[in-house]
Length: 127
Image (cartoon, rainbow, N blue to C red; front, side, top):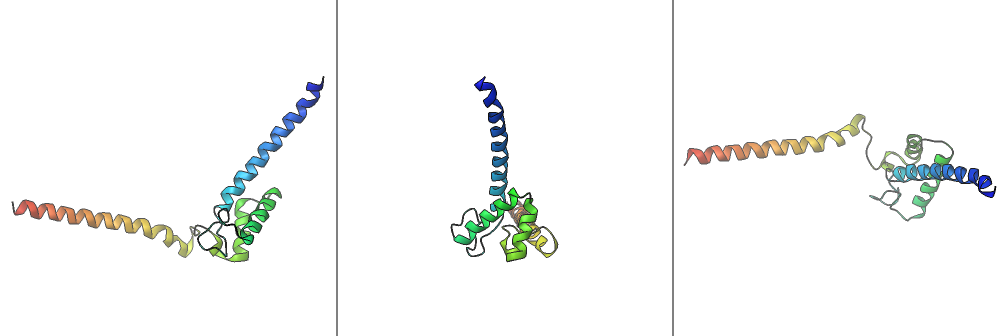
């Protein structure tokens, strides 16, 4: 009889625990995408300064209130500017930050291939 009475409590506890873990995972992912405004190069999940701790607490509260990750990111962008984002947005001028590095690597590889090809052609010519 006692076991039957405790069964709903156990089931409810598992559901709530799962929801808390989901919010915790979402918060951790979110914290990795926000840079601490006073610690250049550190995300708020890495930083131990008071501001980063406050940002972590506030973002968790906002997740609990039903805000999604993008709304929370936008809240911090509105407050601290786009520099608070760990990765630049993939729109407008910031798109260059995503396109230039891969284009540079491809260009270097093509140049390297051309140089190697020319060297092999010249070495065959003189042999």
